[in-house]
Image (cartoon, rainbow, N blue to C red; front, side, top):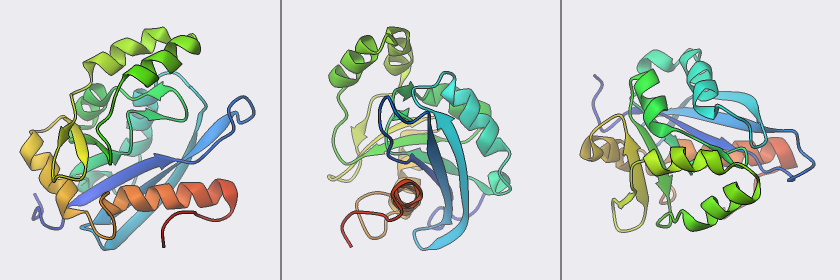
Length: 189
């Protein structure tokens, strides 16, 4: 395995979309070594509120040329493309690498459960309930980890933090996904 201070990590985020108008959402994956070396950018799309997102993500990620080097995969939330709930345990098991959900705030499930029920997707609540609980890792961000021990996986998170509180692969995936949809990224310079 490569040295943990320069881990090879994939950050995945989705682009913005208009509920009820957009049929699919771009997903962007940014693979980095450490917090400063971009190795690859990958783009796909997924239907808004689509089914079986963990299977889709596993197939997509497994087909990436950088796949053999990956030591971890990060997402900015447990949902992607609207209300597609990621089964992080199944994804980590299928890919054989740790998967972390990384947030700036302590995640709460109440609003998400309400949204799932409102959209007629209450069956996805079971996926949410199987997800590992988030823990604060450095006083500023929270991580939920599947497929690896918490300490080792959060060391990957910490090793990829650069400009902001979020890991750089995740921050860059967010910026690129937004630019694909809107023509320009937005956020703090």
